[in-house]
Image 1 (cartoon, rainbow, N blue to C red):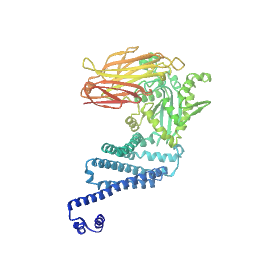
Image 2: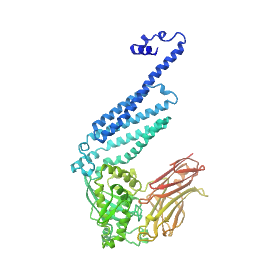
Image 3: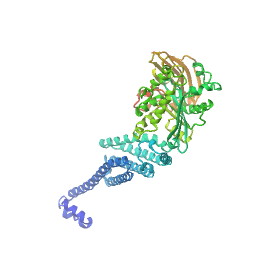
Image 4: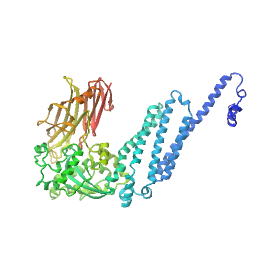
Length: 640
């Protein structure tokens, strides 16, 4: 009977060919009609469901071919494969649409919506891929020349590649927007589906795409800006600040060595470092700058030199001051296009990929770089009969070798170094400042410039300045505790405490820790009391913040706590009373990751806490948690 029905369906019009009386027994016509309809529906929907599955499998089978075509730079094949995948996606979408109205059934409808979201995300991703491949096909240098590192290219080839990149800004912005949209559809699919097998696959694909998108979002703004930064079409000159974070200062560390880097068309045209005292000492005769009071008082210095220019923890301010100080001390370079500051921590991590360097009979590795350089510069140079003015020549020797390695990076090494550099920027071990406003805007947007961030809500920033403590900072463990509650007068009262644990002993590089500590809090905060300070507090306003500053010293193998209790200003308190609370805690540049303990009692019942995996709600209005201050941190709490 079923074969008879199928033959009729195959060979003619239903209205002319089907005679129900020939097919269905005269008894139980209704029951048989129902069975036939069900068989027809199952055949129809089963066919389209199977067709959808087959298209999905075919797309999966094309992925290895796509990967191989990209690796082999066969862009014509890659384009063909992408378009084949897109055809499969369209056929898959058509098959899913033909399952209507079956897809309206409870339990199935949400899976159909999830499938549609996945299809849409796939279409957007394919469109992005086609855009990129079309661009690559128009850049001959990428297609025609085999090279493993940028340094292998001829000057003319470098110029061609940099020119293509400089003109590609609109493309990468579009790709970034499309990728973000694709992730939104994937997120919608994950929230919609109730089938574990689908959710697992979406989470697997989504997590990889999220990681890739986060990386691309950081890289994308730089693609078109990079040529200009790398000296195309005009040479760029950068002032380097080598900030030694074993002697912590406000923007990262004591500037014992500085450098000048010139780049033209992606290649280093000139690079040299020098002992900062070779710049500062001649300036004693004419330097009229008066240093901040703590520098005058605790290191007995009446003139303000380049080596101490990073007193302001806002790096854009310090960078501009550094250029001015360099010029005022009559440095030979007349113009800088930017400032790059880095700590030895960055160099150590870079060397884990770049490998060791050798100077004379010394081997420098990622494990011994800081200690070996410090010993030579502070003590060992005497045994080698090197003058005090030339004791830092070894730093330049190491830097020159690292420069050669950096500008001869292979593609694999670049992949390995990318997360290291991004981490250094996020952790403020590496900071950037550019005179070019477009490049500096990118730095601001990505928060890679070490600026003091604006905030009209609760805010906390602890800044230490090692004043005469030798290289003691590696021996210091810091813990920051922050509490907030409503006091007996109904005011919002905060206490910020910094506990210093000195784990070292007296030796050639470690002594008692002497630090001038500043606490940046919301503008207009009123100090109630301070404990642990050895000097009276200085209270000032800087960068739209109120600042409490004082001095404290910690003996080796001892622990001291410095604490400040203050009332939050009325405008911040008013927002909190309306159920709007957030706390931004900034991490000091160059510092190791401090422990951060938070205990907040608010004047309203709490509904939501972010990040919820860090903080716990205690009772209706209290939140507490322990965090790691490796980067800037933000807490958001909403009212129930």
